[in-house]
Length: 150
Image (cartoon, rainbow, N blue to C red; front, side, top):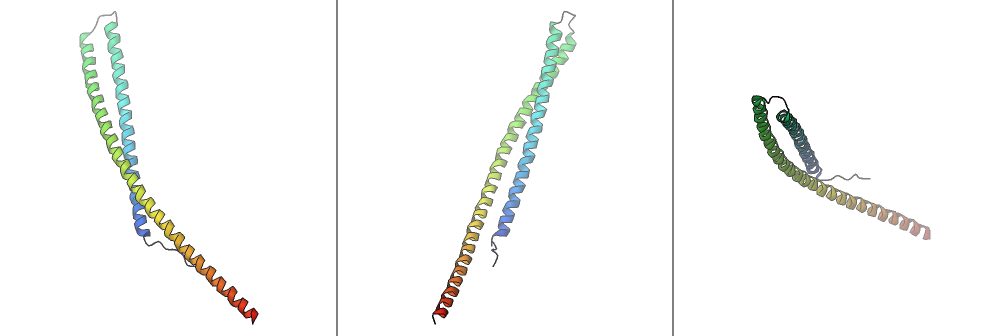
């Protein structure tokens, strides 16, 4: 029996490769986003630690070192700015991730359309072959029956 060959197989292969490339790009963005979120969490923990230390220093009954409190305060202001910057970076990365997800979805749809077309054409091809084989069997049976009548 003849084997089915999909005419658009090279196009399907290219679409599948493009889908895989888009998935890899999206995975890189996800990893980057996770890294940024870890960095943000570390910054926030550092900020809270310094804030607690500053509060303890100010509430302590010992002599307050204004210079030390001022340095804590300036470092905390710097950390606040870093936290804000990191949140902006995370938000921008989320926007990029959304774009990458949309690209993956489009590439996936392209592949699915071609796979569905391949499946439909393959079914039609094999249905035609089975129909032809059935007709040949009918012809053989009819010919044998006619030969037996004679």
